[in-house]
Length: 41
Image (cartoon, rainbow, N blue to C red; front, side, top):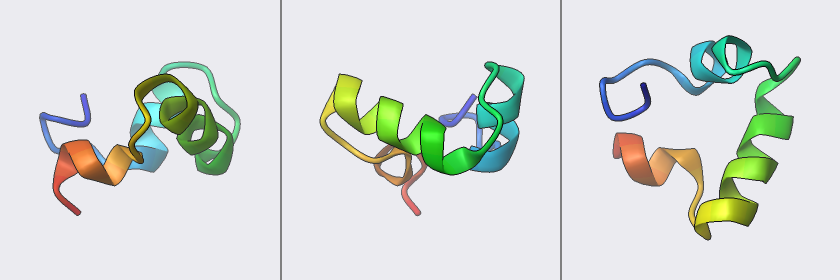
């Protein structure tokens, strides 16, 4: 979804996170990169 250009907030909610910061923390923990790395933002 991130690679398709959806905003982090949208992706976070769609995958079950209540806020983008929690999603960002989990994403970084798993991938070693922030979600912006995927989106190029």
